[in-house]
Image 1 (cartoon, rainbow, N blue to C red):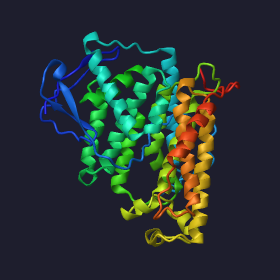
Image 2 (cartoon, one colour; image 1 turned 90 degrees about the vertical axis):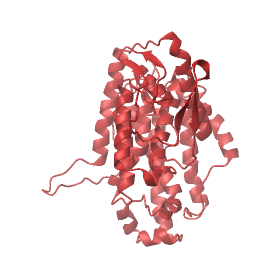
Image 3 (cartoon, rainbow, N blue to C red; image 1 turned 180 degrees about the vertical axis):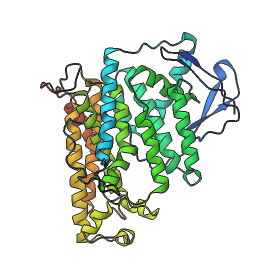
Image 4 (cartoon, one colour; image 1 turned 60 degrees about the horizontal axis):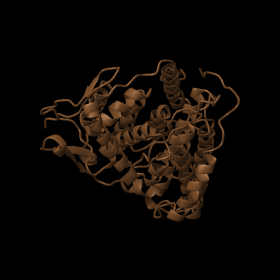
Length: 418
């Protein structure tokens, strides 16, 4: 398929659609096929497939200088007996890099220039991203409408890329996806960051990463999470599960913070905001896992720490049998407590965001916390009952989240903020 459309110029490079010819690239279900035509009749035809996604939207916050204390305290050991870097430490290094990038960008902002004749096509690409976000993340989409036009369009572009990536291993075509296909998707990501988007949706994200200090590493890490899903269906301990949760959801927070923005009056460190964003992403993913235990078991997957199951006298057989016992209730209480502590860590960062960005993040956090409440209300039966938040509760949560989003940022200066 030959793709040729929309060229626009930036301070970094020439951005445009590639002439891919017969080059084979993995195309998730949220792809656009070209339909013949010229001028205003040249359009893109969307093809969608609904499926459960591990990425509920774009969550953005930060992480504090003090590491989250509710995650794994285990450290991996090498064959030589030396202490290896834990998953927390690996992820923390990524956080430091992202925070440094934002601080650098604040000192030297990018200048974006768009060729006037191509502006309408770029706007169309962003609008399409907004339509997808509205269809698959309705509540979050409503929150983004309070953002500035530039910020909300950028968040839509990030959301769409995350959903397309998740669709590779969690959509209808997942059985046909191979590690090679994910390698191609990563190569396509690199082209995008180098100003060579493949299609209309890529173009929106290419423009976004040019405007904001968004680094490629969290995007690559999300693809690594998809690779992990192809080869791994058990997790020995929470240290392993923590890394997976970072890959598939914590990365979303790191992608989003540069777009959400930090309140000018905030005295919190950039690093602390990224830490809270990471905590929110991991808390959301843990909530997904706890909600979907039964569904995942039907696919032969158990996203729960094996050692912690064993401590409660539980095994894979107990998960597959789907019986709610006192042992299971005790196990679930501990898992829910961990997720809530991460949500609490995440809440600290919301007030530090740009005021126009707080509401969707606050709403997302509140609604995901309520899923945990519903699991408890179902007597911890997440084998045959799916915990969900009713429309009425969602409607109540939205104004509450809005009020909370008006809380002023920190007035105490923390370190590492320039």
